[in-house]
Image: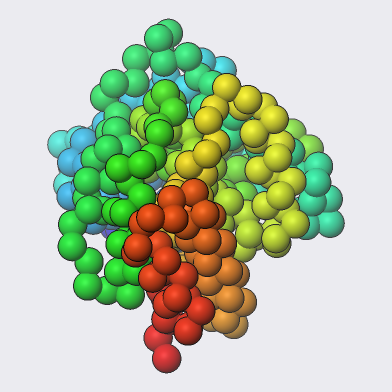
Length: 316
């Protein structure tokens, strides 16, 4: 999403009047690198973040919310980029953060240890004390669930019907801060040290199992099926206060939200493998839901559809 250089120049001068814009580099997705210079000083790098039209429609305050959330999380001591500036007058709104040195890791060779580190990072988000830090400005997961209750006629219909049948039976845990898009690609590392958790535009308040369920599918794609076991066991060991009975529901909800995975697959050649993993994940979640609530007819029907190969995301 293009922001004019003169608007970026004006913004960085609002952070430090000595800075001058050197150049802007697109990083992919919603992020761009801003390189700034100061007389007598080495160049510095900042990160400019925008939001899609779809995200702005979902939450018109999304730029302000993400900026304010980063401020709170930095104060709380979580490893996040420092929020430096936001422009709500500009269309589209944007924010600028400090640059954090680090890279994403996908350490399948150190699966168990790395899965534990992921679980610890997720737990650190969910255990933020909401009575100490004001986050009521964030959306609640109920808003997302209500949007998902709208009629669906797409390939996601089977999952949607299973979720709607199960929803009245779900026992929710106390709300916590949710990242909303927690996966290995949104964690930056310097060696073995976690440098930053990034991309907070989907943050909300709600049941921690929602984050866990969605990220379990992401871990499957990134690290493989054994990593899910390590990651889930490590997280639940750290979160023994949670009632994990409804995890199959949140697995399925996460799969519903990630059903358009072909559009964000790292490479086209990976889509068949991702589809097979997705189908297995959905089948397992629906099977566990059916075992919990056998009277939900659409869950049984969902299993039948999976068995005959009618699955979300397939375009044969």
